Image (cartoon, rainbow, N blue to C red):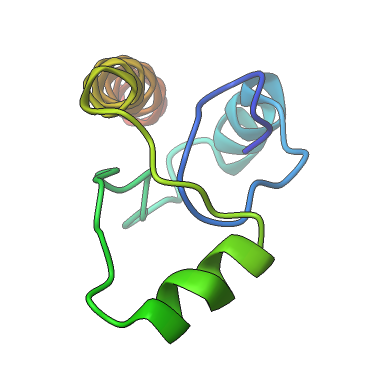
Length: 90
């Protein structure tokens, strides 16, 4: 997903929430499973080399406050996606 939709600490894409909602609707009752956005967390690598590589990839260590906010937003998005999938089975 785009950072405008939900913030993660892995590679962000450009997918909008509406894109996935349109796809769910187009599948209309034919979805049998889905992998929705996973849990975001903060992790501090023990190895200095790994921390440098992560920083080179554009990964920064988010604050605990940021992580908590991201988790709340992910849970809200996940619930909207679950609701949309559920609606297609009715």
